[in-house]
Length: 116
Image 1 (cartoon, rainbow, N blue to C red):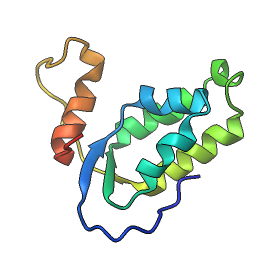
Image 2 (spheres, rainbow, N blue to C red):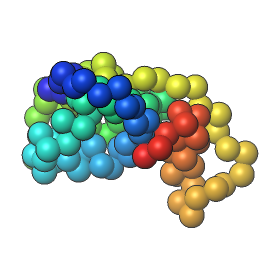
Image 3 (cartoon, one colour):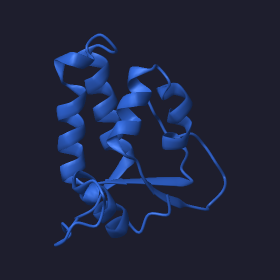
């Protein structure tokens, strides 16, 4: 689904993608517009084991079958695993975000030294 595309630039941008962005793109059939970013070797996408577990849980939920088949969700997840680098994330001791459920995402961005 993603596949790395050939680019000659060596500039690397480190990024973390929120699960809501990925699922929304998958739901609305807009993943093809987002895929080039994920496939571009100038971008290094980071994730954590916690984020991967949550992503798999979310894309396999029955309520999403009306938007995409389970086979597409699993293919997407497998491809996402292939193009991301897993980093170890330490949970923040105190809430840092107005939505504490997003604290892990900020911790992931910090651990990955993400720019985006």
